[in-house]
Length: 485
Image (cartoon, rainbow, N blue to C red; front, side, top):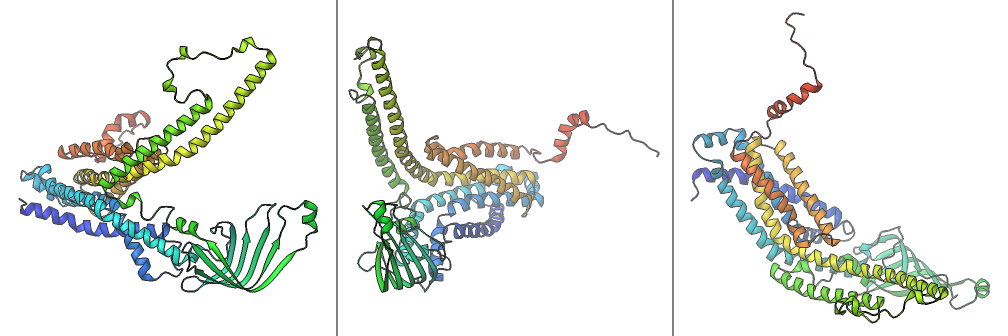
Protein backbone atom coordinates (compact mmCIF):
# COMPACT_ATOMS: atom_id res chain seq x y z
CA UNK A 1 0.00 0.00 0.00
CA UNK A 2 1.11 3.51 -0.78
CA UNK A 3 1.89 5.64 2.23
CA UNK A 4 1.77 9.41 2.53
CA UNK A 5 5.46 9.63 1.68
CA UNK A 6 4.87 7.60 -1.49
CA UNK A 7 2.01 9.88 -2.52
CA UNK A 8 4.22 12.89 -1.89
CA UNK A 9 6.98 11.50 -4.13
CA UNK A 10 4.46 10.63 -6.86
CA UNK A 11 2.95 14.11 -6.65
CA UNK A 12 6.41 15.67 -6.91
CA UNK A 13 7.09 13.51 -9.98
CA UNK A 14 3.87 14.25 -11.89
CA UNK A 15 4.24 18.00 -11.44
CA UNK A 16 7.12 18.35 -13.92
CA UNK A 17 5.96 15.26 -15.85
CA UNK A 18 2.90 16.88 -17.43
CA UNK A 19 4.74 20.13 -18.12
CA UNK A 20 7.70 18.41 -19.78
CA UNK A 21 5.44 16.07 -21.76
CA UNK A 22 3.49 19.04 -23.15
CA UNK A 23 6.65 20.94 -24.12
CA UNK A 24 8.31 17.94 -25.77
CA UNK A 25 5.12 16.99 -27.59
CA UNK A 26 4.90 20.51 -28.98
CA UNK A 27 8.56 20.41 -30.08
CA UNK A 28 8.12 17.10 -31.90
CA UNK A 29 4.93 18.37 -33.55
CA UNK A 30 6.76 21.45 -34.83
CA UNK A 31 9.38 19.11 -36.28
CA UNK A 32 6.61 17.25 -38.11
CA UNK A 33 5.29 20.54 -39.50
CA UNK A 34 8.68 21.34 -41.02
CA UNK A 35 9.32 17.86 -42.39
CA UNK A 36 5.93 16.38 -43.28
CA UNK A 37 3.51 19.24 -43.82
CA UNK A 38 5.64 21.90 -45.50
CA UNK A 39 4.13 21.12 -48.90
CA UNK A 40 0.58 21.58 -47.59
CA UNK A 41 0.86 24.69 -45.42
CA UNK A 42 -0.74 27.78 -46.94
CA UNK A 43 -1.87 26.02 -50.12
CA UNK A 44 -5.61 25.63 -49.74
CA UNK A 45 -5.99 23.38 -46.72
CA UNK A 46 -8.40 24.48 -44.04
CA UNK A 47 -7.25 24.95 -40.46
CA UNK A 48 -9.35 21.97 -39.43
CA UNK A 49 -7.59 19.72 -41.96
CA UNK A 50 -4.18 20.90 -40.80
CA UNK A 51 -5.10 20.28 -37.13
CA UNK A 52 -6.37 16.79 -37.97
CA UNK A 53 -3.13 15.93 -39.75
CA UNK A 54 -1.12 17.30 -36.83
CA UNK A 55 -3.15 15.21 -34.41
CA UNK A 56 -2.81 12.02 -36.47
CA UNK A 57 0.94 12.45 -36.88
CA UNK A 58 1.35 13.60 -33.28
CA UNK A 59 0.16 10.26 -31.97
CA UNK A 60 3.16 8.61 -33.64
CA UNK A 61 5.73 10.69 -31.71
CA UNK A 62 4.55 9.65 -28.25
CA UNK A 63 6.86 6.61 -28.34
CA UNK A 64 9.82 9.03 -28.29
CA UNK A 65 8.27 11.73 -26.11
CA UNK A 66 7.29 9.50 -23.18
CA UNK A 67 10.73 7.94 -22.47
CA UNK A 68 12.40 11.35 -22.64
CA UNK A 69 9.72 12.79 -20.35
CA UNK A 70 10.31 10.05 -17.77
CA UNK A 71 14.07 10.66 -17.95
CA UNK A 72 13.73 14.42 -17.41
CA UNK A 73 11.02 14.14 -14.75
CA UNK A 74 12.90 11.56 -12.69
CA UNK A 75 16.12 13.60 -12.77
CA UNK A 76 14.28 16.77 -11.76
CA UNK A 77 12.24 15.03 -9.06
CA UNK A 78 15.15 13.38 -7.26
CA UNK A 79 17.34 16.41 -7.92
CA UNK A 80 14.83 18.67 -6.16
CA UNK A 81 14.46 16.19 -3.28
CA UNK A 82 18.23 16.19 -2.87
CA UNK A 83 18.56 19.97 -3.25
CA UNK A 84 15.95 20.58 -0.53
CA UNK A 85 17.66 17.97 1.70
CA UNK A 86 14.43 15.94 1.75
CA UNK A 87 16.29 12.95 0.37
CA UNK A 88 18.86 13.20 3.17
CA UNK A 89 16.06 13.47 5.74
CA UNK A 90 14.40 10.31 4.41
CA UNK A 91 17.69 8.41 4.56
CA UNK A 92 18.28 9.71 8.10
CA UNK A 93 14.87 8.36 9.06
CA UNK A 94 15.99 4.89 8.00
CA UNK A 95 14.32 4.82 4.58
CA UNK A 96 16.62 3.38 1.93
CA UNK A 97 16.95 4.91 -1.52
CA UNK A 98 15.52 1.71 -2.99
CA UNK A 99 12.33 2.22 -0.98
CA UNK A 100 12.19 5.88 -2.02
CA UNK A 101 12.54 4.97 -5.69
CA UNK A 102 10.03 2.09 -5.55
CA UNK A 103 6.73 4.05 -6.05
CA UNK A 104 8.12 5.90 -9.06
CA UNK A 105 9.62 2.68 -10.40
CA UNK A 106 6.15 1.12 -10.30
CA UNK A 107 4.74 4.21 -12.00
CA UNK A 108 7.39 3.86 -14.74
CA UNK A 109 6.52 0.20 -15.25
CA UNK A 110 2.85 1.18 -15.52
CA UNK A 111 3.66 3.94 -18.04
CA UNK A 112 5.76 1.53 -20.10
CA UNK A 113 2.81 -0.89 -20.20
CA UNK A 114 0.50 1.93 -21.27
CA UNK A 115 2.97 2.91 -23.98
CA UNK A 116 3.02 -0.67 -25.30
CA UNK A 117 -0.78 -0.84 -25.43
CA UNK A 118 -0.88 2.59 -27.05
CA UNK A 119 1.63 1.68 -29.77
CA UNK A 120 0.08 -1.72 -30.35
CA UNK A 121 -3.61 -0.80 -30.46
CA UNK A 122 -4.07 2.94 -31.01
CA UNK A 123 -1.09 4.13 -33.08
CA UNK A 124 -1.84 1.80 -36.07
CA UNK A 125 -5.36 3.24 -36.43
CA UNK A 126 -4.10 6.81 -36.43
CA UNK A 127 -1.35 5.93 -38.89
CA UNK A 128 -4.02 4.53 -41.22
CA UNK A 129 -6.12 7.67 -40.86
CA UNK A 130 -3.15 9.94 -41.54
CA UNK A 131 -2.10 8.05 -44.68
CA UNK A 132 -5.64 7.91 -46.02
CA UNK A 133 -6.07 11.62 -45.42
CA UNK A 134 -2.87 12.34 -47.34
CA UNK A 135 -4.15 10.11 -50.13
CA UNK A 136 -7.42 12.01 -50.31
CA UNK A 137 -5.62 15.35 -50.34
CA UNK A 138 -3.40 14.18 -53.18
CA UNK A 139 -6.46 13.11 -55.19
CA UNK A 140 -8.66 16.14 -54.60
CA UNK A 141 -5.89 18.78 -54.55
CA UNK A 142 -3.11 17.61 -56.88
CA UNK A 143 -1.94 21.20 -57.43
CA UNK A 144 -0.73 21.29 -53.85
CA UNK A 145 2.31 19.34 -54.99
CA UNK A 146 3.27 22.08 -57.48
CA UNK A 147 5.39 25.12 -56.75
CA UNK A 148 4.64 28.34 -58.69
CA UNK A 149 7.41 29.62 -60.96
CA UNK A 150 9.44 26.39 -60.96
CA UNK A 151 9.79 23.61 -63.52
CA UNK A 152 8.50 20.35 -62.08
CA UNK A 153 8.49 16.83 -63.48
CA UNK A 154 5.94 15.16 -61.21
CA UNK A 155 3.60 14.39 -64.12
CA UNK A 156 5.15 11.36 -65.86
CA UNK A 157 6.36 12.18 -69.37
CA UNK A 158 5.99 15.95 -69.05
CA UNK A 159 7.85 18.98 -67.74
CA UNK A 160 5.49 21.75 -66.59
CA UNK A 161 5.70 25.23 -65.08
CA UNK A 162 2.94 27.43 -63.69
CA UNK A 163 3.73 31.10 -63.10
CA UNK A 164 0.83 31.51 -60.68
CA UNK A 165 -1.44 29.12 -58.76
CA UNK A 166 -4.59 30.47 -57.15
CA UNK A 167 -7.99 29.29 -55.92
CA UNK A 168 -9.13 27.45 -52.82
CA UNK A 169 -7.84 24.12 -54.14
CA UNK A 170 -5.09 25.56 -56.37
CA UNK A 171 -7.15 24.98 -59.49
CA UNK A 172 -6.67 28.38 -61.20
CA UNK A 173 -3.44 28.60 -63.19
CA UNK A 174 -1.71 31.38 -65.12
CA UNK A 175 1.38 31.42 -67.33
CA UNK A 176 1.32 27.72 -68.24
CA UNK A 177 4.17 25.96 -70.03
CA UNK A 178 4.04 22.21 -70.78
CA UNK A 179 6.82 20.32 -72.55
CA UNK A 180 6.53 16.68 -73.54
CA UNK A 181 9.66 14.73 -72.67
CA UNK A 182 11.19 13.11 -75.73
CA UNK A 183 14.60 12.23 -77.07
CA UNK A 184 16.17 13.74 -80.19
CA UNK A 185 14.56 11.12 -82.49
CA UNK A 186 10.97 11.46 -81.25
CA UNK A 187 8.24 13.99 -82.00
CA UNK A 188 8.61 17.18 -80.01
CA UNK A 189 5.69 19.07 -78.47
CA UNK A 190 5.38 22.15 -76.27
CA UNK A 191 2.28 24.01 -75.13
CA UNK A 192 1.97 27.61 -73.95
CA UNK A 193 -1.26 28.98 -72.49
CA UNK A 194 -2.26 32.19 -70.74
CA UNK A 195 -4.65 30.58 -68.27
CA UNK A 196 -5.88 27.16 -67.27
CA UNK A 197 -8.05 25.16 -64.91
CA UNK A 198 -6.73 22.13 -63.02
CA UNK A 199 -9.44 19.72 -61.86
CA UNK A 200 -9.60 15.98 -60.99
CA UNK A 201 -11.00 13.75 -63.67
CA UNK A 202 -14.54 12.53 -62.95
CA UNK A 203 -13.98 9.33 -64.93
CA UNK A 204 -10.80 8.15 -63.20
CA UNK A 205 -9.34 9.49 -59.96
CA UNK A 206 -5.83 8.63 -61.14
CA UNK A 207 -6.09 11.13 -63.99
CA UNK A 208 -5.95 14.91 -63.89
CA UNK A 209 -7.87 17.09 -66.33
CA UNK A 210 -6.16 20.30 -67.41
CA UNK A 211 -8.28 22.80 -69.36
CA UNK A 212 -6.15 25.41 -71.14
CA UNK A 213 -7.34 28.74 -72.54
CA UNK A 214 -5.82 31.03 -75.18
CA UNK A 215 -2.56 29.37 -76.14
CA UNK A 216 -0.40 27.64 -78.75
CA UNK A 217 0.76 24.09 -79.44
CA UNK A 218 4.25 23.85 -80.97
CA UNK A 219 5.03 20.53 -82.69
CA UNK A 220 7.94 19.01 -84.60
CA UNK A 221 7.06 15.70 -86.26
CA UNK A 222 10.57 14.31 -86.73
CA UNK A 223 10.12 10.69 -85.73
CA UNK A 224 11.40 8.18 -88.33
CA UNK A 225 12.71 10.95 -90.58
CA UNK A 226 16.14 11.52 -92.00
CA UNK A 227 18.30 14.41 -90.82
CA UNK A 228 17.86 16.41 -94.04
CA UNK A 229 14.08 16.06 -93.83
CA UNK A 230 14.13 17.27 -90.24
CA UNK A 231 16.12 20.36 -91.17
CA UNK A 232 13.76 21.26 -94.03
CA UNK A 233 10.62 20.74 -91.91
CA UNK A 234 8.89 24.09 -91.20
CA UNK A 235 7.92 25.13 -87.67
CA UNK A 236 4.38 24.20 -86.71
CA UNK A 237 2.25 26.23 -84.32
CA UNK A 238 -1.44 25.63 -83.64
CA UNK A 239 -3.46 28.32 -81.90
CA UNK A 240 -6.34 27.26 -79.68
CA UNK A 241 -9.00 28.94 -77.59
CA UNK A 242 -9.69 25.91 -75.39
CA UNK A 243 -7.67 22.70 -75.07
CA UNK A 244 -8.41 19.81 -72.68
CA UNK A 245 -5.69 17.33 -71.72
CA UNK A 246 -5.64 14.37 -69.34
CA UNK A 247 -2.54 13.44 -67.34
CA UNK A 248 -1.81 10.33 -65.30
CA UNK A 249 -1.22 11.52 -61.70
CA UNK A 250 -0.98 8.11 -60.03
CA UNK A 251 2.73 8.78 -59.46
CA UNK A 252 1.89 12.05 -57.67
CA UNK A 253 -0.53 10.20 -55.41
CA UNK A 254 2.02 7.51 -54.63
CA UNK A 255 4.66 10.15 -53.89
CA UNK A 256 2.28 12.02 -51.58
CA UNK A 257 1.78 8.86 -49.52
CA UNK A 258 5.51 8.00 -49.59
CA UNK A 259 5.01 5.24 -52.16
CA UNK A 260 3.19 3.00 -49.68
CA UNK A 261 -0.07 1.18 -50.13
CA UNK A 262 -2.89 2.59 -48.06
CA UNK A 263 -4.73 -0.64 -47.27
CA UNK A 264 -1.70 -2.81 -46.60
CA UNK A 265 1.08 -1.19 -44.61
CA UNK A 266 3.09 -2.70 -41.77
CA UNK A 267 2.50 0.40 -39.64
CA UNK A 268 -1.23 -0.36 -39.66
CA UNK A 269 -0.78 -3.67 -37.82
CA UNK A 270 -0.47 -4.83 -34.23
CA UNK A 271 2.43 -6.81 -32.79
CA UNK A 272 0.66 -10.15 -33.38
CA UNK A 273 -0.32 -9.26 -36.95
CA UNK A 274 3.27 -8.22 -37.67
CA UNK A 275 4.43 -11.71 -36.62
CA UNK A 276 2.33 -13.15 -39.43
CA UNK A 277 3.61 -10.51 -41.87
CA UNK A 278 7.24 -11.24 -40.95
CA UNK A 279 6.74 -15.01 -41.34
CA UNK A 280 5.19 -14.53 -44.79
CA UNK A 281 7.93 -12.11 -45.79
CA UNK A 282 10.59 -14.63 -44.71
CA UNK A 283 9.10 -17.27 -47.00
CA UNK A 284 8.92 -14.84 -49.92
CA UNK A 285 12.48 -13.62 -49.37
CA UNK A 286 13.83 -17.17 -49.07
CA UNK A 287 12.17 -18.11 -52.35
CA UNK A 288 13.50 -14.98 -54.04
CA UNK A 289 17.05 -15.53 -52.79
CA UNK A 290 16.94 -19.17 -53.89
CA UNK A 291 15.83 -18.11 -57.36
CA UNK A 292 18.62 -15.53 -57.57
CA UNK A 293 21.16 -18.07 -56.36
CA UNK A 294 19.91 -20.62 -58.87
CA UNK A 295 20.09 -18.11 -61.73
CA UNK A 296 23.65 -17.13 -60.90
CA UNK A 297 24.82 -20.74 -60.56
CA UNK A 298 23.16 -21.76 -63.80
CA UNK A 299 24.76 -18.77 -65.48
CA UNK A 300 28.22 -19.91 -64.34
CA UNK A 301 27.71 -23.50 -65.39
CA UNK A 302 24.66 -24.63 -67.30
CA UNK A 303 25.17 -28.17 -66.02
CA UNK A 304 24.92 -27.14 -62.33
CA UNK A 305 21.69 -25.85 -60.81
CA UNK A 306 22.63 -26.03 -57.14
CA UNK A 307 26.20 -26.46 -56.06
CA UNK A 308 25.06 -28.55 -53.08
CA UNK A 309 23.80 -31.23 -55.45
CA UNK A 310 27.31 -31.80 -56.81
CA UNK A 311 28.61 -35.03 -55.17
CA UNK A 312 32.22 -33.90 -54.96
CA UNK A 313 34.89 -32.14 -56.94
CA UNK A 314 36.41 -35.46 -57.91
CA UNK A 315 33.14 -36.45 -59.57
CA UNK A 316 33.28 -33.46 -61.92
CA UNK A 317 35.38 -34.53 -64.89
CA UNK A 318 37.02 -31.67 -66.82
CA UNK A 319 35.72 -31.56 -70.39
CA UNK A 320 38.81 -29.92 -71.82
CA UNK A 321 42.46 -29.60 -70.82
CA UNK A 322 43.82 -26.17 -71.67
CA UNK A 323 47.39 -27.35 -72.21
CA UNK A 324 46.33 -29.83 -74.90
CA UNK A 325 45.06 -27.21 -77.38
CA UNK A 326 46.91 -24.72 -79.52
CA UNK A 327 47.85 -21.26 -78.28
CA UNK A 328 45.35 -19.52 -80.56
CA UNK A 329 42.60 -21.73 -79.21
CA UNK A 330 43.84 -21.13 -75.67
CA UNK A 331 43.51 -17.37 -76.18
CA UNK A 332 39.99 -17.81 -77.52
CA UNK A 333 39.03 -19.96 -74.53
CA UNK A 334 40.57 -17.53 -72.04
CA UNK A 335 38.92 -14.56 -73.72
CA UNK A 336 35.56 -16.33 -73.65
CA UNK A 337 36.06 -17.10 -69.96
CA UNK A 338 36.98 -13.48 -69.27
CA UNK A 339 33.88 -12.23 -71.09
CA UNK A 340 31.75 -14.67 -69.14
CA UNK A 341 33.22 -13.47 -65.82
CA UNK A 342 32.58 -9.84 -66.76
CA UNK A 343 28.99 -10.68 -67.65
CA UNK A 344 28.68 -12.53 -64.34
CA UNK A 345 29.93 -9.45 -62.46
CA UNK A 346 27.32 -7.27 -64.16
CA UNK A 347 24.60 -9.83 -63.44
CA UNK A 348 25.65 -10.09 -59.78
CA UNK A 349 25.58 -6.29 -59.46
CA UNK A 350 22.07 -6.22 -60.90
CA UNK A 351 21.00 -8.88 -58.44
CA UNK A 352 22.48 -6.78 -55.63
CA UNK A 353 20.20 -3.88 -56.58
CA UNK A 354 17.32 -6.36 -56.39
CA UNK A 355 18.34 -7.77 -53.00
CA UNK A 356 18.96 -4.46 -51.18
CA UNK A 357 15.30 -3.24 -51.28
CA UNK A 358 14.16 -6.67 -50.01
CA UNK A 359 16.55 -6.50 -47.05
CA UNK A 360 15.58 -2.90 -46.30
CA UNK A 361 11.86 -3.64 -46.41
CA UNK A 362 12.20 -6.70 -44.14
CA UNK A 363 14.41 -4.83 -41.67
CA UNK A 364 11.98 -1.92 -41.57
CA UNK A 365 9.10 -4.23 -40.59
CA UNK A 366 11.13 -6.08 -37.92
CA UNK A 367 12.45 -2.83 -36.44
CA UNK A 368 8.96 -1.35 -36.23
CA UNK A 369 7.60 -4.47 -34.53
CA UNK A 370 10.41 -4.86 -32.01
CA UNK A 371 10.41 -1.19 -31.10
CA UNK A 372 6.82 -1.54 -29.90
CA UNK A 373 8.31 -3.41 -26.93
CA UNK A 374 11.79 -1.84 -26.98
CA UNK A 375 10.55 1.73 -26.46
CA UNK A 376 8.41 0.52 -23.56
CA UNK A 377 11.48 -1.03 -21.92
CA UNK A 378 13.36 2.23 -22.58
CA UNK A 379 10.96 3.97 -20.20
CA UNK A 380 12.13 1.76 -17.33
CA UNK A 381 15.81 2.14 -18.24
CA UNK A 382 15.48 5.92 -18.48
CA UNK A 383 13.85 6.01 -15.06
CA UNK A 384 16.77 4.09 -13.52
CA UNK A 385 19.21 6.49 -15.15
CA UNK A 386 17.23 9.61 -14.28
CA UNK A 387 16.43 8.73 -10.68
CA UNK A 388 20.02 7.71 -9.99
CA UNK A 389 21.49 10.84 -11.60
CA UNK A 390 19.03 13.06 -9.74
CA UNK A 391 19.92 11.59 -6.37
CA UNK A 392 23.65 11.92 -7.15
CA UNK A 393 23.82 15.47 -8.53
CA UNK A 394 21.18 16.81 -6.07
CA UNK A 395 20.21 19.65 -8.39
CA UNK A 396 16.64 20.43 -9.39
CA UNK A 397 15.08 22.89 -11.81
CA UNK A 398 15.74 23.35 -15.51
CA UNK A 399 19.53 23.70 -15.39
CA UNK A 400 22.06 20.89 -15.13
CA UNK A 401 19.46 18.05 -14.99
CA UNK A 402 17.96 19.10 -18.32
CA UNK A 403 21.39 19.30 -19.97
CA UNK A 404 22.35 15.82 -18.75
CA UNK A 405 19.01 14.35 -19.82
CA UNK A 406 19.23 15.88 -23.29
CA UNK A 407 22.77 14.53 -23.75
CA UNK A 408 21.64 11.02 -22.76
CA UNK A 409 18.64 11.18 -25.09
CA UNK A 410 20.77 12.42 -27.99
CA UNK A 411 23.13 9.48 -27.46
CA UNK A 412 20.14 7.13 -27.43
CA UNK A 413 18.64 8.74 -30.55
CA UNK A 414 21.94 8.61 -32.48
CA UNK A 415 22.36 4.94 -31.54
CA UNK A 416 18.85 4.24 -32.82
CA UNK A 417 19.54 5.90 -36.17
CA UNK A 418 22.94 4.22 -36.52
CA UNK A 419 21.73 0.68 -35.88
CA UNK A 420 18.71 1.36 -38.12
CA UNK A 421 20.98 2.22 -41.05
CA UNK A 422 23.13 -0.85 -40.35
CA UNK A 423 20.03 -3.05 -40.31
CA UNK A 424 18.75 -1.59 -43.59
CA UNK A 425 22.12 -2.31 -45.22
CA UNK A 426 21.99 -5.90 -44.06
CA UNK A 427 25.07 -5.43 -41.86
CA UNK A 428 23.22 -5.90 -38.54
CA UNK A 429 20.41 -8.24 -37.60
CA UNK A 430 17.22 -6.13 -37.31
CA UNK A 431 16.18 -7.86 -34.06
CA UNK A 432 19.52 -6.97 -32.48
CA UNK A 433 19.36 -3.46 -33.99
CA UNK A 434 16.01 -2.76 -32.31
CA UNK A 435 17.29 -3.78 -28.88
CA UNK A 436 20.94 -2.71 -29.05
CA UNK A 437 20.41 0.83 -27.61
CA UNK A 438 18.59 -0.69 -24.62
CA UNK A 439 21.27 -3.37 -24.23
CA UNK A 440 23.94 -0.65 -24.09
CA UNK A 441 22.05 1.71 -21.76
CA UNK A 442 20.76 -0.94 -19.33
CA UNK A 443 24.19 -1.71 -17.73
CA UNK A 444 24.78 2.04 -17.54
CA UNK A 445 21.50 2.43 -15.65
CA UNK A 446 22.35 -0.43 -13.29
CA UNK A 447 25.80 1.07 -12.63
CA UNK A 448 24.30 4.50 -11.88
CA UNK A 449 21.73 2.91 -9.57
CA UNK A 450 24.52 1.13 -7.69
CA UNK A 451 26.44 4.41 -7.39
CA UNK A 452 23.33 6.16 -6.07
CA UNK A 453 22.63 3.41 -3.52
CA UNK A 454 26.21 3.62 -2.21
CA UNK A 455 26.12 7.46 -2.00
CA UNK A 456 28.88 7.80 -4.57
CA UNK A 457 30.36 11.25 -5.13
CA UNK A 458 30.24 10.78 -8.88
CA UNK A 459 29.87 14.47 -9.72
CA UNK A 460 32.03 15.86 -6.92
CA UNK A 461 34.59 18.16 -8.58
CA UNK A 462 36.90 18.14 -5.55
CA UNK A 463 37.20 14.38 -5.77
CA UNK A 464 38.44 14.56 -9.36
CA UNK A 465 40.82 17.41 -8.52
CA UNK A 466 42.38 15.30 -5.76
CA UNK A 467 42.63 12.33 -8.14
CA UNK A 468 44.49 14.31 -10.80
CA UNK A 469 46.56 16.33 -8.34
CA UNK A 470 49.69 14.09 -8.61
CA UNK A 471 49.53 14.38 -12.40
CA UNK A 472 49.10 18.15 -12.15
CA UNK A 473 52.22 18.45 -10.00
CA UNK A 474 54.31 16.96 -12.80
CA UNK A 475 53.47 19.86 -15.11
CA UNK A 476 52.72 22.79 -12.76
CA UNK A 477 55.22 23.83 -10.10
CA UNK A 478 53.55 25.06 -6.97
CA UNK A 479 54.70 28.46 -5.68
CA UNK A 480 56.17 28.62 -2.19
CA UNK A 481 54.15 30.58 0.32
CA UNK A 482 55.70 33.96 0.97
CA UNK A 483 54.48 35.46 4.21
CA UNK A 484 55.91 38.92 3.70
CA UNK A 485 56.16 40.68 0.40
